Amino acid sequence: KAGVTQTPRYLIKTRGQQVTLSCSPISGHRSVSWYQQTPGQGLQFLFEYFSETQRNKGNFPGRFSGRQFSNSRSEMNVSTLELGDSALYLCASSDRQVNTEAFFGQGTRLTVV
Amino acid sequence: GQQVMQIPQYQHVQEGEDFTTYCNSSTTLSNIQWYKQRPGGHPVFLIQLVKSGEVKKQKRLTFQFGEAKKNSSLHITATQTTDVGTYFCAGPAGANNLFFGTGTRLTVIP
Image (cartoon, rainbow over the protein chains, first blue to last red):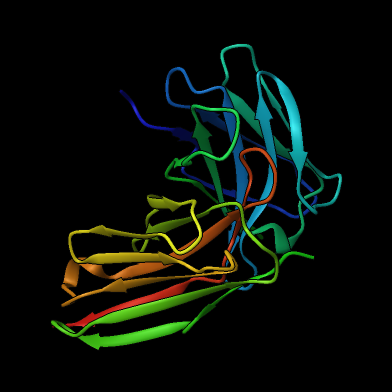
């Protein structure tokens, strides 16, 4: 089985722009979660989708949004980019509804200049 | 709010020495997971502990969940250079979202 695939791997954007990141979960996994990883704040939960429904959202501003499609692929969008949004964005998929191991993708490294 | 602290933040060991990282939660956890992230890599699931006082072993790694289900530890016996990375504990924060600990970065000196 193919693992979790995130595209693109690297992005450089300018302040004020918006960005869309993509995540394809492991086949059959319906839960997709997004995390932001920075040296200062560590790994922080952004949001989680299950069967196209957002079930949970972390403590991030409304500039961060996401969605999940019927094939379980997910996208996250960040609008009006700020320098502080520079981070590694990780997507994880799970094969059950709750309390199960998360399979992470390689991440998208976003740099905002 | 929920907090999960890990100590130490950094650990340098000589190859062959043992290593332990401790995870302490401000709230009782229904379960705890451990992940390893190699430098430049992504977190990889190691194990999940569910029961109070549970101890699980994976080769040279021993995981323990505290009796009060608020703390956990990971012990590596006779470290090898392949053990290099950051070890995270994580507790559930609802459905499939995890609240990650601050992590312990392990360096193994050959």
